[in-house]
Image 1 (spheres, helix red, strand yellow):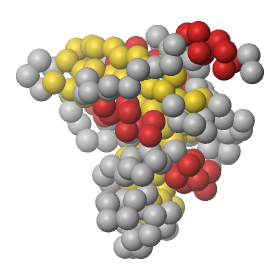
Image 2 (cartoon, rainbow, N blue to C red):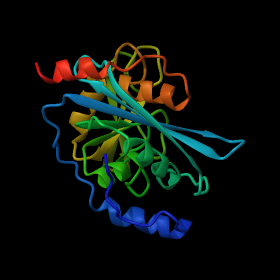
Image 3 (cartoon, rainbow, N blue to C red):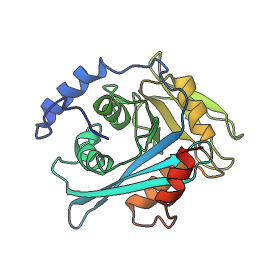
Image 4 (cartoon, rainbow, N blue to C red):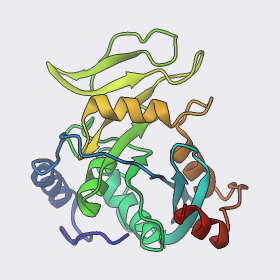
Length: 237
């Protein structure tokens, strides 16, 4: 899965912020997701001692959510840790992992923010623009905005607000677990993003695509992808 070349990566903090503001104008909240057969999840882990990041992508069949393909890549981290600019730190290794894919997903869930970001361009939105594909931000913590308490029943959510602007939803995916922060990445509406996150949950707090990507990034993914023979058989049904 190739990415567009929208900007340089070796930039200053000030330049990165300017790029974010410019790219944010291109993000689409129009729902362009249809006929999803493959859904992906991406995540990253960074070894602090070595400064090497491992990016992981998993592709699952939908609606079965069985593993179709997983890929990882490792790169030295070149951009400093700056809250709000993590996409400049994390995107290169994620893009490298996704370039290895032979199965191109119809929808991508990202462990990170979409437009629920001070400059409206978190990792999910940034990647969505680079790939020109539908993405959803599905973060475990809040970067900005305020919200009311979320009811404990799975499927309940509260609007995530920055002033009067709705920038996401605080979604309960499992009872007695902390909620997730869901936001538009690119080419999807917030309503659809919430629905897809819930459809991809299988009894865990995290939706299955990002849960497995998290395991893959940490070197803990134990599930074997289906064989190429099975893949051919499925594709010919």
